[in-house]
Length: 292
Image (cartoon, rainbow, N blue to C red; front, side, top):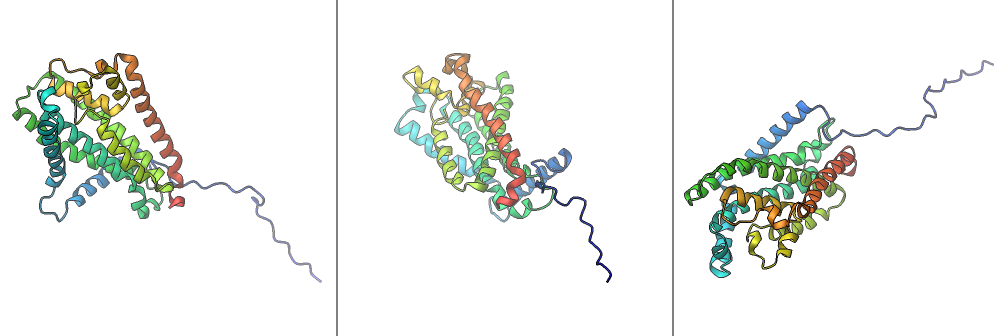
């Protein structure tokens, strides 16, 4: 009898299985990432107002309506703004428009990865494009809204000074903070769906913990001002008031915090948010498709 031939074992038989990681946050190169980010942002911007009668004006109507209600409440009912701030309507409108960008961009980013499940499952699609596209779309709305806001500021009688040149610094800090928060929320929501409810509450609380509806010096005690300066958003909005309105006696963030040491908590929260947002997104990006 002829003995049956033995089948040769594969060379890698018995080797431990290796984890196959999914696409990374950037996945495919910086040039491709930036092209996809811009394309997705512009597409989302156009789609948001496609088929509507007023189009882009809807993004301006919402903050204007909120501005009108709050202006009436805080100047006619409580009489806080009209007695303490010379250009309170300007401070209120600018603050609402800036905070609306932060709130809408982060809120839209929460479920952005989940709603784009079909795109996420595609090979080598950079995951980071999805949450950042919501931020860039919000930034496009913000830039158009600021044109109207600054026209209102000039018409209100606020003088144009060199300190306006510092305003882009505040915008950059706000954009970075919005981006890293959006990155963290978008990947955490994939695993923990409670994130959407929690962030809806937190973002509403942050509105009242930022000097938007009231000036930072509205408190009778300096202790409250210093506690307020723990919030990075409060620091940004306080400096915006100083740079744009340049009111005599208006405290800077440094004054309200009681010195440089008083600003360290806000700086720690800002940079800590940046580090955590980047770290958690980089860690979770290859696993998003599995979690979905």
